[in-house]
Image (cartoon, rainbow, N blue to C red; front, top):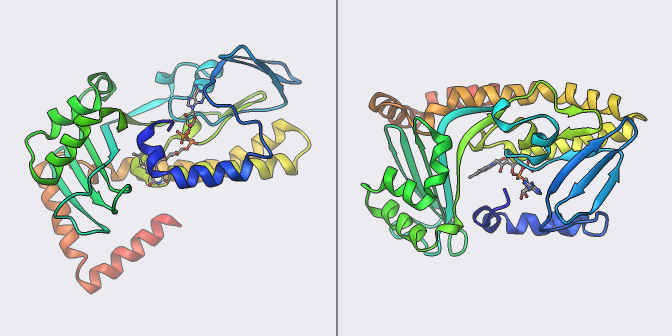
Length: 293
Ligand SMILES: Cc1cc2nc3c(=O)[nH]c(=O)nc-3n(C[C@H](O)[C@H](O)[C@H](O)COP(=O)(O)OP(=O)(O)OC[C@H]3O[C@@H](n4cnc5c(N)ncnc54)[C@H](O)[C@@H]3O)c2cc1C
């Protein structure tokens, strides 16, 4: 994600991953991919600092706005399926008042949802999502202005979170929500992985797991096959059904995150109350298990 807000939340994980590979990999910060050329034998990558790297396989794991995808497969709009929402998330410097530690306070209204989570000092955060006709235009407004316009009428913890954001707007992750849908994840010796290839979006609650699983399976496929094309084909064939399922589940469930109408909000509230009843709770648990299998 490459932005401060999410790296605050995931700093521990990033450090653990860095420590695990620092000795094994050549890690470069502050440079980006400028150009990619490939033959049947190799890929030549030119970095922004002018360095040229030759490799047998280039893996583009550079997120939903992937530069590798743009350079090799074409412009983002060819693959980006707009889901009509915007998401903002940022860490809270001050622990939310009136929300017990380990809990969250959520406001769900037609077309918008705000949640303030108290996970204690340094770990508390706020999450916002809203529907809008042109989500791609929202990031240009800036997180603080856009979220204030969409949620500024609310009080309590939401107002407090927005005040904290205005004081330090650079901490926010703020972007439109869209899936990446591609017919092929590789072209010759260049392969895309994770959000770059199949972004399921934040609403799936599964994107990181899918990216890690995809990476693990890619490594296994490369180790098991002598030639790269067979390895990539085997890998993609094995992973596609899971990705397809997760993307479809996310699209079907999206109205839960910012219910389109008051009726949807009411239906959601009724469902939440309904699952308190033991019989219904069992039914819901079984249907969730079925969806995940
Ligand atoms: C607010 C939010 C909450 C989420 N919560 C969850 C959750 O609870 N559970 C879950 O499973 N998933 C969650 N996700 C989804 C999850 O974060 C992603 O699916 C996952 O991070 C994808 O991993 P990735 O490695 O493919 O891409 P990313 O994590 O986006 O990593 C891409 C990396 O590439 C770098 N990069 C980008 N462009 C370039 C370039 N041109 N040159 C060099 N480097 C570049 C970036 O800096 C970044 O480090 C959430 C997403 C969001 C936005």
